[in-house]
Image (cartoon, rainbow, N blue to C red; front, top):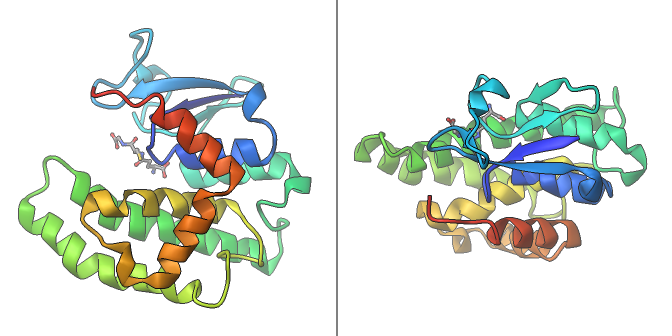
Length: 209
Ligand SMILES: N[C@@H](CCC(=O)N[C@@H](CS)C(=O)NCC(=O)O)C(=O)O
């Protein structure tokens, strides 16, 4: 498989899932520069993913899969023994999808994407940071008050995606200290070998472009 990613972007959740399943070393990683939509060799990323977004996963048959929440479940389902997604058809699997969707549409897009959008008016960023974020992060925080992981009492791809969001909260001007359960969750997840490894690999690739 081949993962198209941008360092420390949401595609890191897929890198985490690949490490969780032991498939990271057998995967090729292609860096995408989102500002120019190019790969490191200068080729046009739109030719890979017409959406111009990461992540994209090239499957072993050459097919391209896009949308992080679909990709995460695909990677998880390749290695059921790793247990990073509940079995298909179970209620817990729908809980997983419920959280993946919440993280993707509410936390990632409504909060982070709004705040980091260089073209968004300051009023919109302030609204996302001061009105939307407190409500949405409170939901996540409450869910984690009495448990270590979002679904089924064990680490799943929903935690990988949530970790990505929390890793950017401070940069977005959202102080996680307001939610002790989120601070603990983030710190705990950051020590997980798959996450520590993925973060180290991607931090090493960060450049100013
Ligand atoms: N709907 C996509 C969104 C992914 C997304 O927003 N990726 C960001 C990086 S975290 C991106 O590629 N941004 C560049 C762009 O939207 O043009 C998914 O869930 O995978």
